[in-house]
Image (cartoon, rainbow, N blue to C red):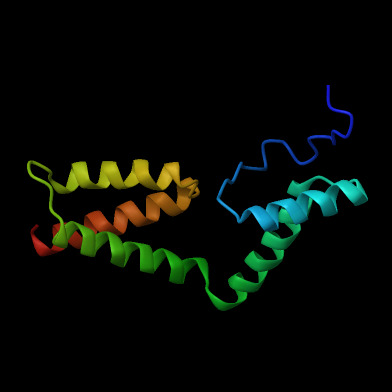
Length: 124
């Protein structure tokens, strides 16, 4: 049992775990800061990331970002075709990769549909 343990506030179906590497110094300071005020690190990180996301949404629409992912996917299909892989298998692998990156299913559907359509238009 931890003496200074804080609650798992924010855990629920509307939240996702996000992990990443951060410098030791930053983690140490963040931990000390949060311990001193009695707030979980996740609360501070969520506030910072929510503020960043709101700022980015004003600059880059979901449609714009989706279009860029479609472009990258089409380039990957042309530049690095895998042996014995047709457009159906490519789209299935792309779908799995997008799911692993926690992209919303509606956005995944749009991306896969466009990639498939663009490749069937070209006759690939």
